[in-house]
Image (cartoon, rainbow, N blue to C red; front, side, top):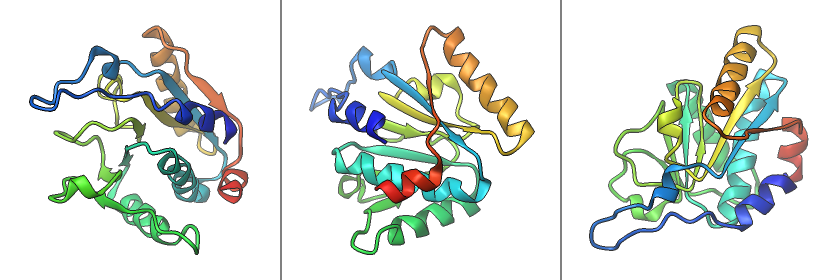
Length: 179
């Protein structure tokens, strides 16, 4: 978790022109692509929520793209109860009161969203979509042969596009307990 903490400290900014909401070119090039190794399927959503907690602590805005409605509901519940002393304010995208939230959930890649610093990607997010974020978090899901193959392909796609993705070996249980 310390590796991502120092990345988040830097607050890779997305600059806005107040009148026209034009983003700079730097907002379309991820600074960091991080793959977290997930070894147990049942730990993924809790791990995502632990990461969200750390990201929000650093003042970043993020979008969590989920694989399906069931996963969206599970993450929504975990964001309420991950830590007994805190609640992570969040909403589903689209949201009429979007100025109130730093965290949005959306099933699949969200269209027409307000820019976020960080994307927690699901497997359906393509490279062009993910380039809109300063930090992209993806998962090397090694618990399932097909998901492992898909993760390796996404990792290689980033490398082929000239980026240097990294892999973190922390287990989801350790990460969740550390926050």
